[in-house]
Image 1 (tube, rainbow over the protein chains, first blue to last red):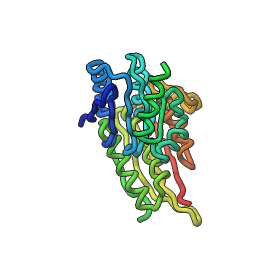
Image 2: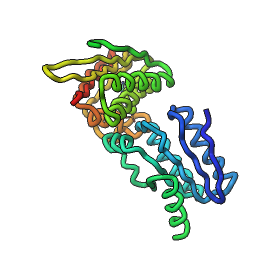
Image 3: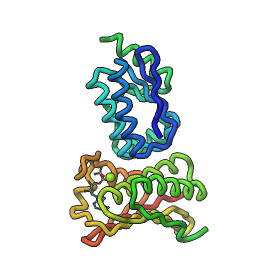
Length: 119
Length: 133
Ligand SMILES: Nc1ncnc2c1ncn2[C@@H]1O[C@H](COP(=O)(O)OP(=O)(O)O)[C@@H](O)[C@H]1O
Ligand SMILES: [Mg+2]
């Protein structure tokens, strides 16, 4: 199953609504980078509101896709990380320090706008 | 519902998701809250992924355990893989032989109440427990 990526002006919006298995996560990584390349998007919001578990493998895939997108020139904000997910990530010792996050999609878009205007 | 509850074989990538769903359902039935369900599901993912990555075949089994007035969920991950040579090393955050985050085993130790590893050249057995409170 592939995760849909929507384009809104210069941004890409992704809402992950499925249980992330390895295959889906890796396809998502590729699809997002291709979409950034095709559209020239300058910002991406990845909404994780429906994601109930992020273990170390998925955390690595997400962290990597953020770094890869930024290498291509697009800023990425992760939004909607559930309380239980944030607690398990900290127990795993994964702090996602280099990753920008926001409470929800709306805040994520605001954060992206600010980040892009600062440049 | 006492003793052995279920056993899930791990050999394909998809088995990781299956084991985690089975474990989450058992945790829910035993009465764990949503945060601890997430801790348990994350633990199962990490242990099952290690079996999938580092061995040919293994199993994750689930048991209800009772001690005096406490009830808990015991999860046992066994495999007949190459074993872990230096256990203290793999318990360090960030140590990985596969380019992973190396967060799995030290993370599982923090996620659960009890954690034990036995490993030799015939395989590895990791036992964890979370108590209901
Ligand atoms: N069941 C196992 N059998 C053999 N080696 C294992 C097993 N589980 C873990 N290991 C070893 O321990 C290391 C650390 O595991 P872990 O903490 O889960 O981090 P990661 O999987 O990201 O490398 C692995 O890289 C691997 O070398
Ligand atoms: Mg691991």
